[in-house]
Image 1 (cartoon, rainbow, N blue to C red):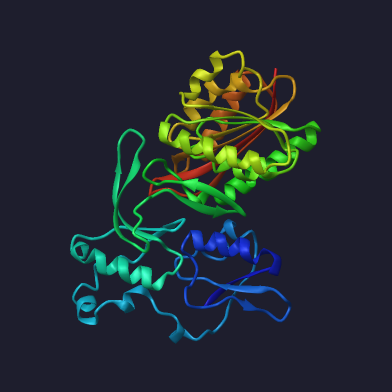
Image 2: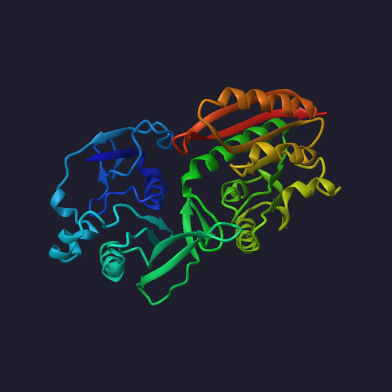
Amino acid sequence: MRHLIVPSVATQHWLDEIKSRDWLELGIGVLTMENGMKAIPLNNMAPVSTDQIWQSLAHIEIVRDQESVKHWTDLLDRDLYQSLKDYWPRAYEVVGDIIILKLEPEVYPHRYKIGKAMLDRIPNVRLVCADNGVYGEFRVRNLLPIISRDGSTETLTRIRENGHNILVDPTKSYFSSRLSTERLGNLNSAKTLAHQLNRSLTICDPYAGVGPSFANLISEENLVAKVLAGDLNPQAVSLLERNIEHYINKSPGDISCVVLCQDARLWQNSPNYQKSVDFLLVNLPHSTVEHLAELFPLMRRETVTLIRGWAIIGRGELSTIETKLSNLFSLHGATDLQLTCHEIKGFSASKVFIRIESWQTFV
């Protein structure tokens, strides 16, 4: 069985990360190694050992007692399981204390039995929901509660990411735990920028959702002076305000904050926001490249600034997009430009998900 090898002091952090993605092999404990390191057991849904999410930590195979592992399907009636063995859900998503799973029509009538088996097998889960797809202008998830441990069908929950609690509700706003490594990258880049400027930063995230990007940033002492955040989804903005308030209340510094429920392309029209931003986050993958030019007026002038964005592009288009963006930045007065486009993961057979990072001085 594959195990992730981590320093003892980082064990809880990695357990939180692995559990949030449902990559932990349940029923098998964490091992203490001879050198004091810890070995966390991974299931077969965890990415390969070379994936960047592991931050170059070692992976080793350790023989464990497989009989102590019991999958939730082992709790189903054997005849029932065998009769529908090709249709039981093979994967599920854990969001806070909620399990979300897709059900084939063949096993949908047995959803209560599935949910009960999961609650019996996975002690930290409160609610099991069927995923009936997305709907509405903001493409939020349509979840059907199946069974609850305490009778509550509330889909508001908290997830633990990089040591911080984030309030989320998948029925009200999109949230992806798979971008947690990117959010750690935001923190590292912001610290580099603050060191160069020798001051705290104004950080802007106009497509913030419920605000996971701010958890690491605001919690870092003396890193952030002002937050400008927003989203078009009113329900996301409600959670965004609560999360940012929580982060700021825990922060040792004095941080001002503006939260808007408005199209970010209109922010350039306000003198209060023009030429004020040191660090801009643009996480609107299907439209990032198209929106950038209308966000440039927010960037501070005559000093180094940083933009990190994420986009979905066609496979093989990386160099083309990089050239297009370099020309776009130069056209809008960016000097000393250092721009990189890096593929993070595949998105589909024809598209990839990339990170855009640019350091520049606008004049």
